[in-house]
Image (tube, rainbow, N blue to C red; front, side, top):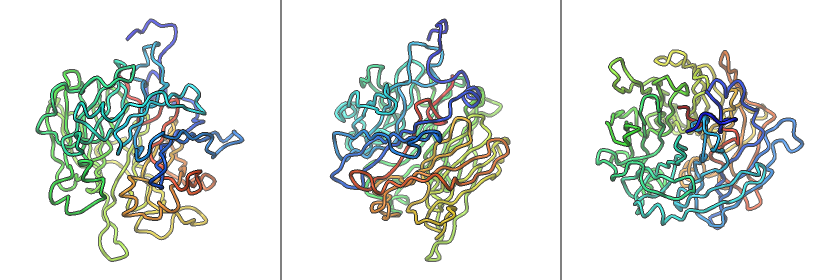
Length: 453
C-alpha cells in the first residue's frame, strides 16, 4: 500500500481518531428480510440525522430481483485497513444471501439511493464447495474475505471464500481444503500486528435452517470452540474447546487498538462471554469473563439468555451485547479486561418479561438481536430479527407485525444506558408487508466493520 498519496484512503488513521473525528451518522443501511415467502429481501436506507426533515424515515429501498435470499450480514469492499492507500474507496457493500448463497454487490456512490452493481451467483461459491456466506471483511490487500457456514450441499464443513477487487470469486483464503479439526464456521476477526485470526462456530445450514432442535445440541451438531489461524501464512494453528458454557460461540471481536492482543466472543446457548488473549509466552488462551444466569420462564423452566450479537466501543472501554431470549441489551466496562463490570441495561421485549423500557410499554415482538454503535460511542441502534425460522419458532409475532429499530443513548465516559423514547421505527407496514430487520451499517464505517493494521 502506498503512503505517499496527497490524501488518505477510507476510514480513519486509528480507532480513537474515528471516535473523536468521525462524522455523526446520518444514514443507516439495514438488511431486511421479507416476512412474505413470495416477496424479495431488500436493503433499507434510513435517515438517522436528527436535523433532517426525513429523520426516522426509510428514504429508499433496494429490492433483490430474487426471492428466498435471507439477507443477513454484510460488509464493505474497503475499510480502515486500507486507510494508507488513497486508491481505495469505501463504496461497495458486499451482502450475502444466507439461504440463496448469492452475493450482492451494492454501489453506494449515491448514498441515499444505493443500486445493485453485480450479483455473484451461488454457483461461484459452489465451485469452492461452499454455501451460506456470512461475515464479510475487507483485507488490507484489497481482497474481500467471506466466511461460509456450509459446503455446497449445506452440510459441514464450511470455509473462507475470497473475492478480488473486481468482485470475482478467486478461491479459498486457506488454499487447501479446510483442516479436519475445523468443521464449523461462523464469524471471524483478524489482528495483523499479532499475525492472528480467530473464528467461531454455529452449525451446518441444513441444521439451523429448520429452526432450533435441542436434540441437535446433544448430537453435537452445534459448535462450542474457537479456532486460531496464522494470518500471513493462512494456516490453521489450534482449536480451544469452550466446554458446555461456551455452546454456540457466535459474534467475536478483537479490541480495536491494533496493539491490544485481547478479544471477546459471545456464546448464545452457553449464555456466556469468553475472553481470548495472548499470554506472556505469546500463546493464545481463552477464559470465561461473563456468565448470564438463566431466568425463570412462564412455565417455571430456566430460560437461557441466548446472547446473539456483541460489539466493542472504539476506545475499547465498553462491550455491548444482546440477550435475545431474556430481552435485554447490556453494557459492560472492560477497562479491566479480566473482570468486566455491568454498567448499563435496557429491556426491549424477550421471552421472560411482559413489559419493556418504553414509557408507554408498547407491544413489541422479539428480543434485541443486532446492534450497531455510533463512532463516538453515544448511540446504540437495535433490531430484533435473528433468522427467519428461529424468529417464527420463538417470536411468531414478528411474521405478523415485523421488526423494530430502536435507539439507546449511551454514556461513553462513565457508563450507563437509556432508551430513547422518541426513536422507534416499526417495519410492519412496509410496501410488501411486514419485514424482519437484521444487520446495520453506516457509509462512514462503524465499530464492527473496521479493522486497523
